[in-house]
Amino acid sequence: MTPQAPTPPTPHPDHVVLDGTARARELRQGVHAEAAALTLLGVAPRLAVVVATADEGAGWYVRSLSGAARRVGVECEVVDLGPDAAPELIGATLARLSSDDTVHGIILQTPLPDGARVEELAASIVPEKDVDGANPLSAGLPAYPPATAAAVLELLDHHGIELAGRSAVVVGRSLVVGKPTAQLLLQRDATVGICHRHTKDLAEHTRTADVLVVAVGRIGLIRAEHVADGAVVVDVGTNTAPDGSLVGDVDAVDVARRPGALTPVPGGVGPVTTALLLAHTVRSARAHVRAPLRRPGGPPSRNR
Image: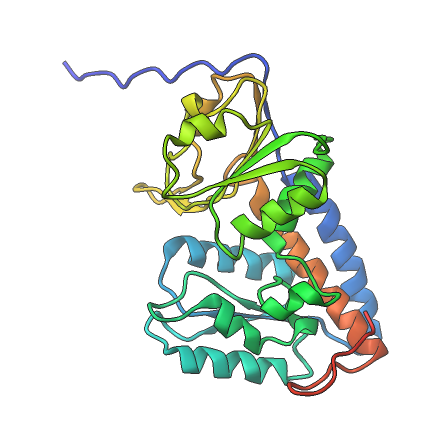
């Protein structure tokens, strides 16, 4: 007799899914209209994505971004340098794209090859085209916030999640997601803690969160025992499961046993991040119409 698979736990009646597709659709509609207006002015909004990885999750994301860009009238050039690309080649490619007036947005896709550091390489992207907020200089200029971190806040706002005075915990301290997300939450008057791989007794910290943001890249890291009743959980993870499907860092089936809310993967933070990257790109293209962007080494444009 063939053994039957265990029955999955029943979701709690007060568990809510915080879908991101509706907000992403609204953002894309605005991008489409702006891209069409720019085309009439003779400007074709163009995004360049520099890739130096064979990571399956990154590949899925870049394909999704390219398709979304095409549908809203934004050109998307994927520059695949291969997973063994030297840091010098990556930096030179970013510098070349920065000096190309037909390119309005540049993204350096992670992960990077061994020995390549995103904070060093992203310095080759001029802040005016740094649509993912990767260049350390962008923090001190009127530039774009990291898109994934901004998408977390965008999604929470869309669903009416109050942040001021709430306890927020971010699991993950990467420069591209964890730290900027914590900073944006602080700017919204949340009380913020950060956990990482050296944090002892992770659940002890995560159970204190009214808002829990998880951005580590580890399948099933967060389960029901890590989550307080009524907490809002934002799953930023994008991992490829053994069956080829895309899953997050949160065991969604297990966490659904708790009352509260959870963003799905796919369909949560991801589509909002993509839409914001495209919105930043057309915003940069619009600024280009008003004043050509500077070349590397020149004074930054103050028009935006």
